[in-house]
Each structure stands twice: as structure tokens, then as C-alpha cells.
Amino acid sequence: MVKQYSMNEIAQAIFIVNRHAKTAPQPQHLYAIKKAALQKLLKEKKATKVGLHFSKNPKYSNQHSTLLIQVDTYYFHMPPQKKDFQQLEHLGDLDESYRNPPVRMGLSKAKEIIYSYTNWKKIDTMQKKYTPSYYIPSSLGQRNWSRKK
Image (cartoon, rainbow, N blue to C red; front, side, top):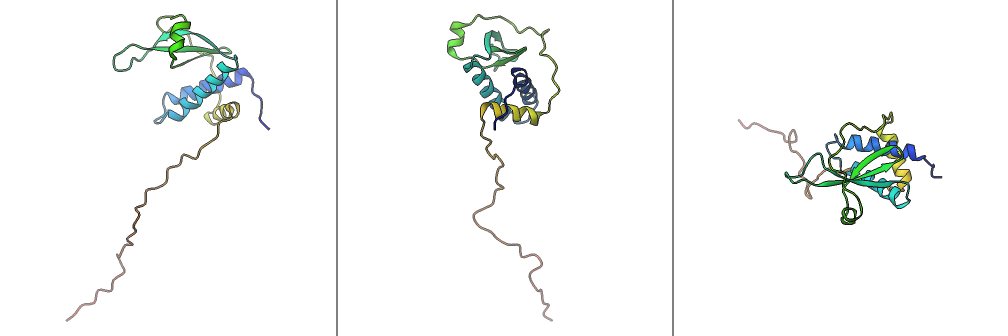
């Protein structure tokens, strides 16, 4: 049975995942589940596209824009699509004075909520330890060194 979560719980879960992704050494998975959740919310019309913002951190010194999305009382950014530039208003620079409401939730709980909401299939990403196709056992301590006198 899939548990139903409120819009506020889903928004809080996305907020926590996004906050952890910003400091994670390998944030690809966290950003992927954030994007999947936001896309599903947009598809179901439970989130709205507000407009476009200039990015706070330009890539390779080139200014680019990000899509601002509202979910409940929370706002998130994600990369825009081509049609977003034609359909949405550009809001200019990011308003640094605005902050999302504070949340107290663990990352594992946030991921559980997003996995449940998006029907995300967990893939075991544990990398196998590299072992060569050949095996040479160590011969240390195996030989009897006899002395000939």
C-alpha cells in the first residue's frame, strides 16, 4: 500500500533533498529524484511555473536562467526547457532576501517520501570491487627455505 503524502510534506521532502544535494560529493542521484518529483507535480498541476531567474552561479562565465517552480509555500529552481523561455516571464535576478520556510526532516525520510510519490525504483548502485580476471595467490610464507651446507 502506497502512503499518501500532503503537498506540504512533498515540498518539504524536495527541500531537504535539494539542500543535501548542494553539499553532497556526488549529488546526481539527489538532483535526479528532485527533478522527477517536480516534473510529476507539474504534470499533475500540483505545482506552478512562476517564471525564470538569472542563475546565481553562471557556468563558464556565461549567464543562464533557471526555472522557478512553486510547490505549496516552497520555491525551487530547475533547468528550463526551450518552451519555458517563450511562455514565461523573466523575473530578472534572484531575490536573495527570500528563504523557504524551515524544515526539520531527515534525508532518509525525505527520500522515502519522494520515492513513494514518484514510484521510484531503487537501483542498487553499490559498485563491485574490481577483481582481475586472473588470480595469483601470494606465495609469502609458503616455501620451505632449506639451507645447503
